[in-house]
Image 1 (cartoon, rainbow, N blue to C red):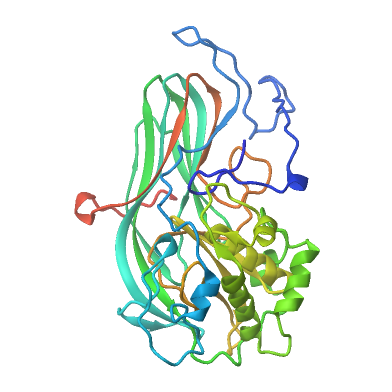
Image 2 (spheres, helix red, strand yellow):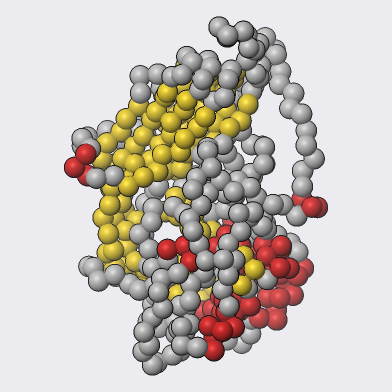
Length: 416
């Protein structure tokens, strides 16, 4: 099954990384050597006479792709006043918020100083969101397991569980944690008849905060090699080819090792804004393709930034929000605490070390194992598999903002 991104767009792997297509072989149900998590193949006939199919994987229906600008001219922006930098003292009228509905200014809410004394948090919004899955099929379905991402808390995202729901035909709902990077809802449906629907959701209040960059950055340092917070964010990830020598060579060209650590990371950010052209594409490309073609959208910009940071020994990771992706990099604050800092690349403005956004953060990281796939995946994306299915099973990913007045409150999270 070809991997898709959160918007349902197919991803493109470099030719050398393309896996050979293999026909899966499943052990028979009566095989004593079969592992407990392997689903047996079945053969049956539904009332219409059509045969059920063996184990199958499904992805959600393609979501609407937002209407985004097709191209950007960074050279023209650099010559004008539209592109602000941290060094500019003259105040100019900021440009309109552009690619992918990006916020370019901080909110005016309550200010909270982060515990490490680095950046500040400013309250932007408090909204209610519903997350979950809906399974439907025009034929019988047996042994269905569906998964979907559910937000967890980060410094800039606080969560309160308000309500939960599961239809009577849902066997169980569990939550799986991914080492502080994300959470996955796992929905089991043992049996479902033709034209039935199974649904499981959780409703959350998300309090979102803007991150304001620290005023003084001279004393910020790189994390030491082997530091626990950044170890897993230094190697290769899906579509982030840190082992390619072109990234190492480019990093050596861009970064001046005599500058402060903060300025070294910022030089990577500035180079990408100046040299990579924004262009939305329904096909998602790897970081190496984006570097070769000198263009990409939020996915490719994030991958390029992460790849260049990692080749310099700087831990970096992708952050997946609803309808958007941006990168974070790890640094050590003056008090010695390791801190993840974000940056926004696909905008006219220079938003480095800070973030102005209130979309739900679905995960932080870029290497996960998901249901139905044996290879690492960039996303905790919605997916489904079933022991046996007739007809055309469908998985709908539920992620929507809701009116608080329309929900009934309770205090029993699904994870219990």
